[in-house]
Image 1 (cartoon, one colour):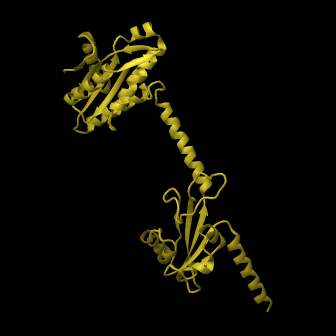
Image 2 (cartoon, one colour):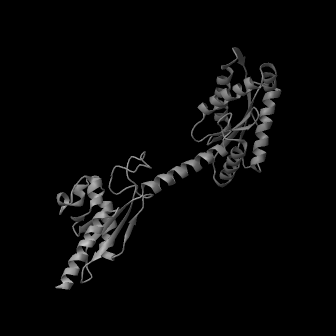
Image 3 (cartoon, rainbow, N blue to C red):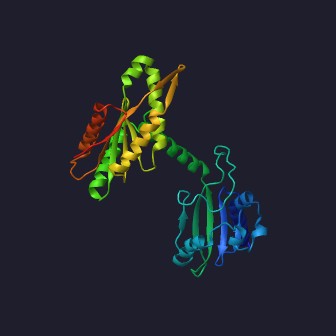
Length: 319
């Protein structure tokens, strides 16, 4: 009699613990019908244990992907091993609203999930236990940290005045593009350009006016780019553009369009109108070019030729 009383007490302690722990707990039978549903699940779903008892899990949560979940769970039934689902792979199993005060901006609860076998006395597994952990704070903090690191990485490779890639990162991209071209039989063109008589702009209107001219040119350049193009500020008033999958002829079309757009632009600084032009040089990649520095030097030669022949024009380097 004493043992029976102790067993009943232990059962009540166990049930009380399952109801008060701050994790979701569900027991499912072999047909995925709900047998146990604790207070966590009730509080976050708005459904009581009696309302969901013996209900098919996929009827209760219609947005739960049945094929995916049963595939995960069948291995638990058959192999008697636990299965884990992390929020990085799947943000949540059950789409519960997030009520945490610290991470209140998150729209839903991020969850880690553990699916465990519940063996009967004869060793067979006819039930599984699904434990749901609220990891919203952890997930939110990690996302914020990753976002901050990504922002720092972007800032470290971005030129502040132009919002283009800075010289170091752009030249790294150029080196990678040259290496890619050596591995694959494809084409690419490099463009270098600078603002004509830029020193005169600074001397006449001041360095703030010069900075504004650079900003305007950078904006026109950014607006002209395809997603695959890589532009950067090479230094001062000089810019570089990597035009992937583009031959010299098509690069010329692009450059002339950009050159004309810049020529048609007027910068107003301190109520003074400033007009300016650019000169551009193009070099199509070739197996004859021994390294990326030579590719850059050849493009600079084409740019120098454009400047020597009157500026406000585009020239293609000829091997």
